[in-house]
Length: 138
Image: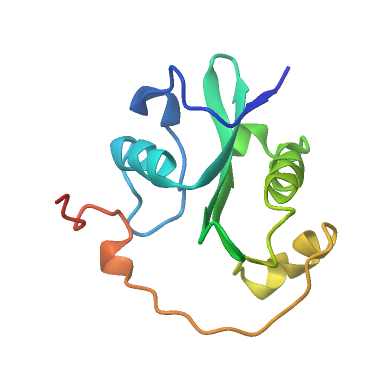
């Protein structure tokens, strides 16, 4: 059974193993925990006493929100967990004027199922910083 939560109570870096597969420079579980702690909104999927999926959002707390990450562990994919994470996050963000999410064109039909529209945008990707290790705490 999958449980969903928006709290990190009891979650440690050990509970975040196996995410970011295929990334050229993935964040460590410790960095993953830090990004969850620093996100404005999170929803976690918990099964077998570990995190098996998550979604994050950052906002200006007034008008806009951005969903940067949605991940489900490979062993738990195709079970509807990703969809439930998206639905729960969109519900949490329902009062915002704009909710933005960038994805590859092949994923756009997936997000259209949730009422999202295709859009154009611009990005910078610093893959050498993808692990988050270069971020200085200060």
